[in-house]
Each structure stands twice: as C-alpha cells, then as structure tokens.
Length: 498
Image (cartoon, rainbow, N blue to C red; front, side, top):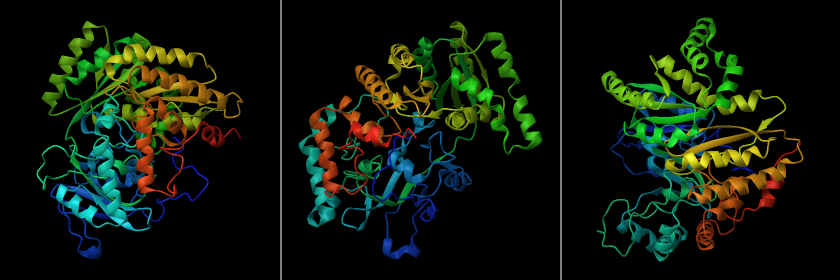
C-alpha cells in the first residue's frame, strides 16, 4: 500500500517458491535440518518461509485451535513475509499486539551474502557475538553502542501512541540500558528481530520466520454499535475498553453504503442457500437503519468468554449506550458475526474493484492518535479532506487504538493528483504531529511516507535511522529509498497517472 517494494533494481517475490511450512509444534525438533539448528521453544510455535500466504498459514494453525493474532484486514491476500516486513497489525492488535510481539527467531541474509539466525541474546551471548569480530559481530557491536550511547534521545523520540511503524523500531531492541545492573545471563537482553520486523526489507532478506502462537478464543460475539455522532467515539471507546474486548473496529457510513451497493459481491462462492441465508441475516440491521437512519460510524466490539460472560459485558455496555441514545445489537450466531467482519475485511477490495472511473490511492491510510483526541482530531481531518472533493474517501480502522485508515478514491488521470498527494499529506501529517500521533501505525513508510518522517522525528533521530541502515547495508542495496533517503520526488516519480 505504501509502494514498499517498488524500486529500479531487483524485486524479489517469495510467494511462488519460498512458501513452505518448515516446522509446526510445541517443541522444536529439527532433525531433518541438522545443519540449521535453531533455538528450542516450549510454547506453541510455527516456522514458515516468507512467501506463505496468511490464508494458508491460518488453515494450518486454526486446526490446532491456535492463531497468529496480528493478521491485517487483508489477511486473504497478504503473505507472511509482508506481515513481518511491515510489522502488521489488525483487529486483534488491541488485545494481542503486533507482529513484533510474536517473532521468536528469523533467518536473514545480510549484506555479506550469508544467512544468519537472528534471535534474542543474553548479555553473555551478545559478548560472544561481538568477540567474533566478523561482519555479524560488528553489527551487534555497533547497534549495541548506538542505542546505549543515545538512549535518552531515543527514548524521548518514542511515539506516544500504542502502535507505530514509522522509522526503525529501535525502542525494544535492548531490554534495558547497559549501565543498569543486569545479570549476565538475563534472558532477552538484545534482539535484532525488533529492528528487522517492520524494516520493509531495508536491512536484509528474510528467508524463514518462527512465530509463537496463542489459543483462539473459544467463544465470542459481536456488539454492533451504530454511532450517529463522531464526537462520542472517545467516550465510547473508553467505556468498551473496560470489558477487555477481543477487537474494537469501525467503518464509516460511506463504507457501509458501498457494501450495500455492491452487496452481490459478498454472495460469491456461497451457493444459493448460503446466499439466501446471508442476505436474510441483514434484515434486523436494515430494520434498524430504516427506523433510526444511517449512522456516521459502525463500531464492532468483539466480546469473548462464556455466553454468560458475554451477556454480562453486553448488558453493562448497553446501559451506557441507552443513556447516550446510541443504538446497538448483539450478534446471535457465528454467521451473524461473520457478516460484519466480511464488510470490514472486504471494504478495501470493494473500493478497489467496483468504483468505476476511480482507483484507491492509500497515501494517508494509517494515521494514529491517542483515542482521547479523536473527538477533536476526526473533524479537523474531515475539514482538510473536504477542501479536496476530487479525493472522495472512506474511513475504517481501529478506534480502540485511535488508528484510522483513510482511503481516497481518485481519478488516476486527474492532473491534480500528484500535487494533491503531497499537499494533503503535508496537512494531514501536520495535524497528526499536533496530537503527538504517528503517520503510520501498521502499514509502514514505503515510498509514500519516508519523506514525511521529519514530521515525527527530529534530525538527530533521523540520523540514527540512517546509521542503522548503514550498519546493516553500507552499499544501500536492500530496498533503497524506504525508511531513509526517500524524497518527495520519489513519490511523484512512482505515482502512476497513466
């Protein structure tokens, strides 16, 4: 979405040949890979190649009642390597975190052409790596020194939001600064995977990833809340968060109208009976819409637990909703729940496939501010976009984190497009900066946002990012122009108007 893989050199696609399952189990056993011994793990985990599609990955792990919960809304079309390289998040991130929280180890080809196992190191293991005095050892030495020599600057620059994919995510590489007293055998002192995850292939080539897995919730239902006024969103979010939701998602009235307009798209592959059942399931919602009118936002709160737990949580939520004249309903079955997720998951595809004469142009698609700022932030955002009627747009996202995806629809042949992209990006990111947010929570920098990293980070921090790039990739051969050295001219150059 950000032009992450675009460049004028070799572009590597792993989905055709490097898409295999390497290992799946509760304990590591690599007897068939004796020359590639990796760490052993006691928790459920899986090792895969980066070209495996998440949809295939999900089938494997769900059979065991497990999941990698950092999947994005585009889970039907994304690959595991993309999730790793972008540090993806999605509907489960509110409760479970992003991809970085699930990487146990990875195999990476570095600038010297050799493949290395990257895992969390104790201080003793780090010392041993540094004492190798080779390419790998020098990387560990320089990164360790860079962080410890600039720890205050780095900590001060950390975005004050729950999710961030802008820049190199340096903050969790070292568990504690070295001047603190730490036992030499403390587990997980330094982990370079925290840098590789979300680096968009700019530091090396990932060939294998081991993820830890978590149990799927056994039972969940969806509270569907129809919000007439965006000003209520912050208070609503804070109220729902009291009940530990699995997910807290939203999409706007434009998304809902497009879903209704192209409703037949949801019926593909369902058969006659499945289509009738799916269509019939929307009657309660249509009745509510006719009676109450179109909402400004549809909010989806996934509640998990026993039926009694879910009902208790919903009863508490509905008391608050009634006090504020907000209407809602609780899904009655798994199929009733899934229909709302289909709209949320397919919203981008609907825009991409069905709006004639226009294409999706996701360039301000991933902003995040703290949820308490949303009542001020969203109207100001709409005010900016209203001045560009040629950028028809929809909004969906994760209000529990304050993260929204704004997807403009554009006439790709409109000569105003290049200027609009740059000007609107400037204005929106200035607004994000005003509220101490991040220009990208999940989708990363790529071509489209790297030139705007100076909206978030001071020159000293940008210099640290450049030093990280030079430590790993002194020849600048890995995906140049992303994370560092990107320019607005690059945006104009790659923005298609044909």
